[in-house]
Image (cartoon, rainbow, N blue to C red; front, side, top):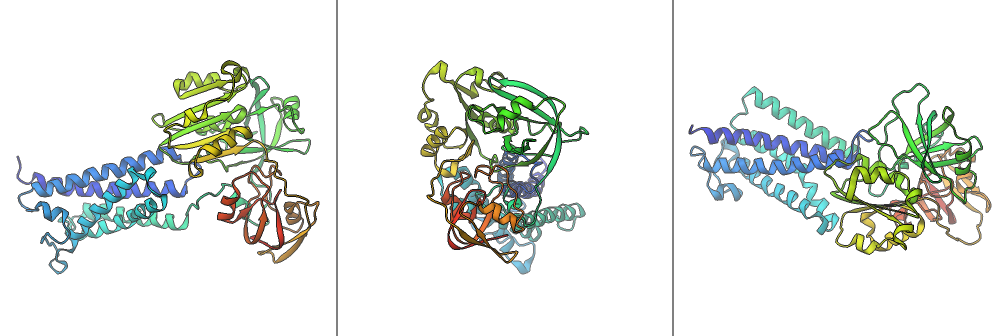
Length: 506
């Protein structure tokens, strides 16, 4: 064996480990910020992030093992694991510091990797605090490499090092400039932007209407010029602006990777207020209709394991989420309905995914599905869309940090008799009086606020606005009142205020 073989392994494994660390951190930042949304996918980003970080640990281990095996370097076990024990010094003036930094980086890496494997069992704030040290890790590694490496003068090494440092710097800048606050909606930015017209409103042509199940109409849309459709991510919905003056939101249920068309499925509700019934009676292939969106406040977040629970037409966002996941992602779907004949896409889902799909048809099994048995031992993320009793049952059983849900309709929240109040619009320096029979949203828009609105019922979250001062009366059903107060938002299409000191960021 060439006596220098271990020295070659030491040098190559170190550079590979450094590159993997940088790429892992970069992918983690893309995952956290979703700055490339809607072109990225949280599932494959998470897979690649974890794979790269795990592989970097393997190459660091190989780097340390080759140092121990190399007879020229003479690194002992204590040299490799005890900071400042090694007296190796490439730069005499720095003494043992470069090698000591490498040892400290090894322990930071082990801490980050170890806590990531146990993240479900750790308080999230502790896990995040340790995980953020990976940013420091990739920067300190560059000093360790530059001060202790033997290839610093080689042009290939210099170019590689400069590229890795550049990528690290750009990734950190992105992380600073594009933070992703916890528990925000995709509609947040649009809802806070003043003097904005209805977002992304355009005409789409209907290419096909079909029966997706008993009482459910499937509708496919394309642009009139058959252009590539705007990108979207699972959980997104579009708003149909119907000729009868109504606006109705429907989840996109096609494959997000297929940019040739949009698909929705519309249940002809027996309690229709003119939306779904008009669609079933009047929409035909060849027609053109105004559409706005896509918007999303039911976004699929990265997780190792998923449980999807759909009730009836609630399958529509779930189908898109499932279509977007990589094949090896762990997930199950509980699809509940009155009968198979009324359950859209049920045969397609079972045929494609087999035992991953649990079908509960009331006319076959009788009664409600056993949610306790379904959730037993499951500690992944749960996504629910369906009627209110199903949502309430899941809310009672799943911790809030792991539960994601979307409602069909607003929860009836009786706030007593409405009273007149005042609101201050901080950016436009206006004080607006809201009548007892007037919505806050209407009053804001009548005074130049131009907030986007969609459902008008406190369900879709499109009109979200930041509260700077005051106490809102939350009457919406977008998220829990505690979550809204924690991030300081309200939904003025339906919510109101206590007192006269409400100040909004408009």
